[in-house]
Image 1: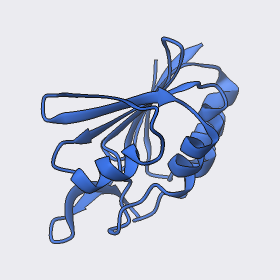
Image 2: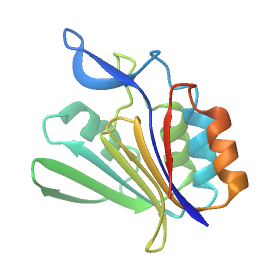
Image 3: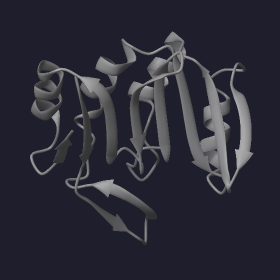
Image 4: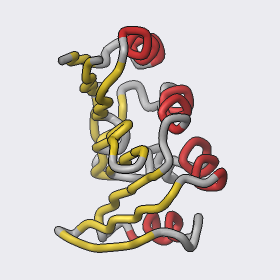
Length: 150
């Protein structure tokens, strides 16, 4: 079993938003990638910058089961994964600017990390993968994705 850290080339459109977004401007990898890891996960933790008020409110409205905390100018929302959360994470995940809504997403099974998604979906880490899982991830990610296997 090996760990995989992977990054997608990004850029910023400051006049639209200061967030990093993938090159090209799409998240085609998102549904197949996240679906695969949701199958192994039972818990989700989402991090948003406190200034992302609209995103925080939209996320809180998905379920009343979130445990919410604040630290370091971030809002943390954690809950068990439900069908409604899966639907939102997979298909209702972009802002009006076409960016992933959430700064960080952590999928886990109990206390075991399954997938860490950071910087609006452009930097990811998956521990304990076999060669078949790594090959699958490489097959769905953009061609300019930088992979580090260790």
